[in-house]
Image 1 (cartoon, rainbow, N blue to C red):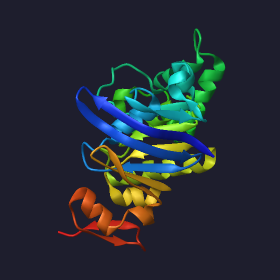
Image 2: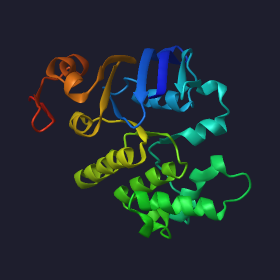
Image 3: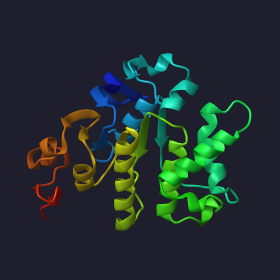
Length: 252
């Protein structure tokens, strides 16, 4: 079933066209990697799907409803976006930070159920032992898990992740990507994430969207669209694809 549909979308920043003529269908339970060179529109696409950015042309649908016709609070219950936070105030406990993810569901004050859901979100990312820790005491890998847990506390249908492996060492990158994949399988959660590493996109996604200059250059299964010809045309780099290892190897 199609859960996210992007139809003929353009997005502009003043006189700059950031996205142009975007058509995408994303199905329930899919893990979708959005890749492309810097400035190709990856983050803009995620923010447009989330409804933060309004298209100058076209529409974005969730469950076949135009997100611009749905109250923002209701959209926030269905779609959760994880961006790269650069500052965290000291003195904030992890569990209190996770509870802020429940805001779309809270009218006055968090309830016992909100606390239970927040703790379950931490357990889902294997970080419940961090509940009473200060956010500023966490490692990069721990903090990334907490960001994902906060998004899961919303109980969304769609999880959007902007470069979830950036600034993480190799071990934590693999742990986070395995976690994302397992959440998709266990919860039928639809995941859309921007990535720089093409090998990670190959190994951990069901579908890859390749952007170039704000347009969809290719979309499809990883082993179909991550090929030498497309990558060279999009990135200007010759690569070799090892299908057995699911690896994209630059030729230098």
